[in-house]
Length: 427
Ligand code: HOZ
Image 1 (cartoon, rainbow, N blue to C red):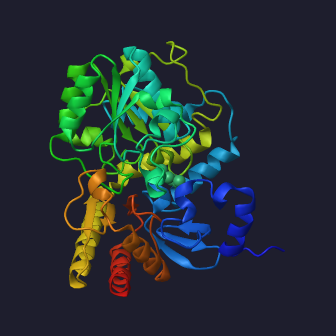
Image 2: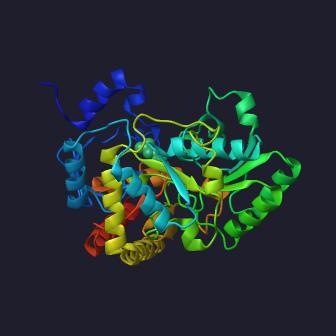
């Protein structure tokens, strides 16, 4: 029988899966060593194929705000699965999920359910282009919006981590329709809109950047984007795949009082299963087929099992309101990490919002990709490995966000900080 250790699984995987991984940021290339294979997750803890128990601060990259295998979510999924995995036909649950999303985030007058964040953003861009009859999209340096062609330009997340500025396989014509501004820099947006007057269909932004590490918006930045988009006749799209339902039981747009024309959601709204959505003004959403000429489709769109996981997650978030506690624990962690770094004479800036954080190994705030890139990535790699040696699992890349869940306790934060003190002194 083949060995089931992480090392032997990775060796088998590398023979049949490119790089041994099904998504590049999992490859550990930025932190050294080989990926750890997971076999189980409960609450805030993971069990590896090697039998180790890890305290998890990656949270599957964002969906697991309730922690792993929340009993109510598991029960809802089991019940839905027992009734049939997929029909390729309409189901009551998808209506309820769409109603719930529209109720919780008033900027969503209508939504279309899809299966991944990539699809949601791809659909939002097509809608924006179809609605405005314009071709260009303005995005931000270090912003990541999934892996559709036109957005693999100056992208964050795995591309930033692996030093792939722009993906091969994207035609120059496609890339030419993507304009790139600097995050938190309204002047760079204004200049691009002026230079491309009448041809920008949409400004696409993560309202809180999460794919160059966590970079919160500067005061007035999102409000400024709204004004600039309106003046240019462009739509404003908030990519909330990470931020939706992460800081409150609603979108970040709703929390910060800026109303985008379209919003993309994913991660949390699927409760850990593949489900995402694009939503916004009815006038725009009604351009989608079968009502309008903008096409989008998917066999597993609105899949009943994923819908059950998402709906149950949203119900629990509304009922239990874990957000103040997530923010309290997040602050405890960020303050403790900052103090540990100071005590060991290390340069560190811990960016944090609510229960989301990124330790940048550099001094001072991080406002954009230029700042993020000056973080000492070798120091992050050493930190990651030292934390892993203490059974703390972090995102295996500097340019990603780490997540607390409702399953984390103050004792878990203390465990993180104890390991971090060790990591700071060791590396
Ligand atoms: N979008 C995730 C990182 N920000 C990637 C998740 C994965 O590749 O597993």
